[in-house]
Length: 118
Image 1 (spheres, rainbow, N blue to C red):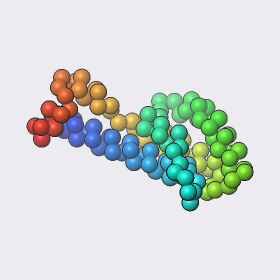
Image 2: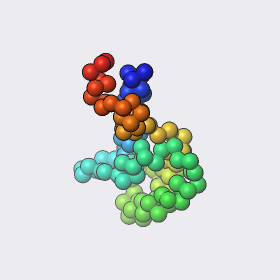
Image 3: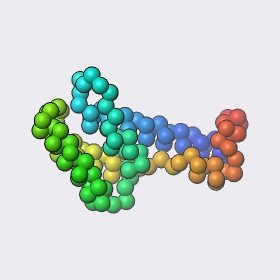
């Protein structure tokens, strides 16, 4: 049981990292010399699987308004309103992985000990 629970955690963590990476690619302007660290992409694993997508949309409206202003002066890629729809669909349909701390609490042991039994 310990091994299966930790493997589920690992898969969730990897999928959360992949979600953040892909959203960063979508939200950042392609071909820029500087590295883009998009705030929404970094927070995506914590926002995914939102219970109330309407509330999530309200929360990120201001962010996409700012992206719209930036896009008006420096167009790159699709317009922000298109990206917003896709990002909302992604965040509202993706489930959030279980945090590692929960496994530690439920299993009553450190994850390192669980890894040794693998």
